[in-house]
Image (cartoon, rainbow, N blue to C red; front, side, top):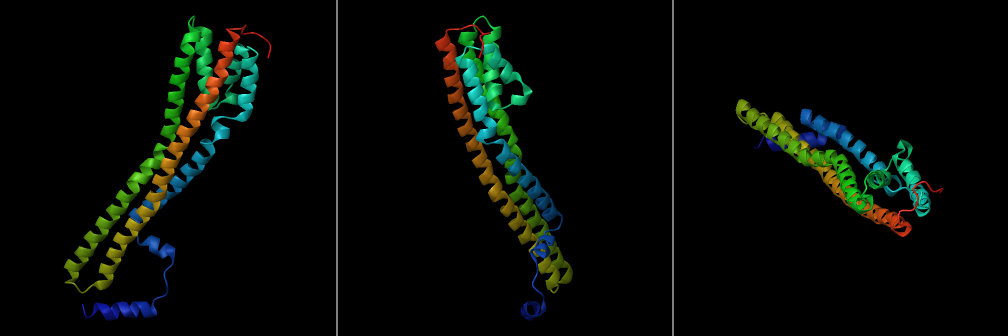
Length: 233
């Protein structure tokens, strides 16, 4: 122990300050895996911010167009608009499923609400599934950090046993590996879990708003009393 203190003092006085990359390199293989997961997580976050937003889930232009067609009783035109791949969105997929049931079934008026609910649940679950990757990364990152900790501690004790307690540099290096991977895992996991929760709540909010807007559009079917599907818009 008396030899360790002078050694540490000498390192503090003579060694150049280490960069963040030097610190990351101490994480070894586990650290590089965490870095790769960080890049994947960043890509997922950017994708979700683009995909899970009102203008993508519930576009104002589509609402206005469907409002005009539904209010004029042009159900065929509204259905054609929803089924057009160019207009693909959460709104058109859900409303299109309901209008398709309305057109094909003799009891369409009574079944349309069920079709809308089923399609809404399916599309909401589809959005949920896109966030699973971020949740998985947030869950396994601390475990990877713990794995690095275990590997580092095993190496530390192994170095102590091989050097009879005198190889302080190897001991410090292995302990550093343990601490760095734990730190990296937590730095990745905390924002991933927070953003995962945010995106899930955002999906719930947008799905609820979409349901209200679709219900408002369906009122035109009730008010029109099944007006001619081929009426001009």
